[in-house]
Image 1 (tube, helix red, strand yellow):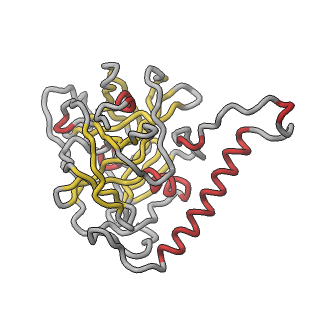
Image 2 (cartoon, one colour):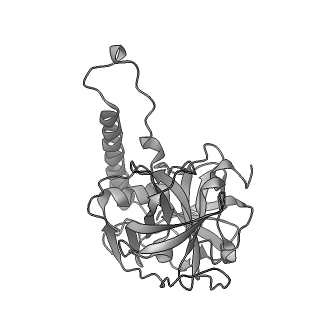
Length: 292
């Protein structure tokens, strides 16, 4: 286990007027612009809003704008995808997984807006409400940090909250489901979840940026149908044409996988919604809560 796995190359600092959060590069658009995942309470939910981004591994200061976001103060929904305002391909993206996390993991961001070496986390519980609880606790500035697997180094979580002296976050599998359904529908927030305080900082150029505004909503740039940020959508090269049906393409395979995952998700939600209240450390809640 290591707190400095290869995925920390993607870590970014997200700057707003009076706050500082974290994020990570998770994809590259066909036009060469990088995609960054963070919290909605870090970047806001206003499409087109521009924030300042510092890429720690290269030392580059760039800018990115919000292109998709979801936030709710009732359900487990607090994430935003940013796109750089100019092409940026210095960092190979670290993709997000649609699968439930297992094994050991590590995280890295900017606690108190300062760089640090990274942290190994120990899972405490996967609440039946979709929240991932772990040790150690999280502090201001770490909002939006990626949580990556020691096994495949894909991102499986998004550090978002503090709960009873534990760190807490969203599973990227839940973010995928909300992005596909284009809503904040999900499980109710358990009592005691606290958004990390924005870290008030000095010494970094604010350049007139305003504090983010985040509202209960799913918002998206109208042209977006899908984003190249999911690990399971990264298709291996196809065999030579002689070894496969002429009409078969990588896009067919991606769409097939999506349909299978959506079918699985519908049955999972159906069965979980009829089950007993959550177990574990008492943080779980029964069925899903549809709506804001």
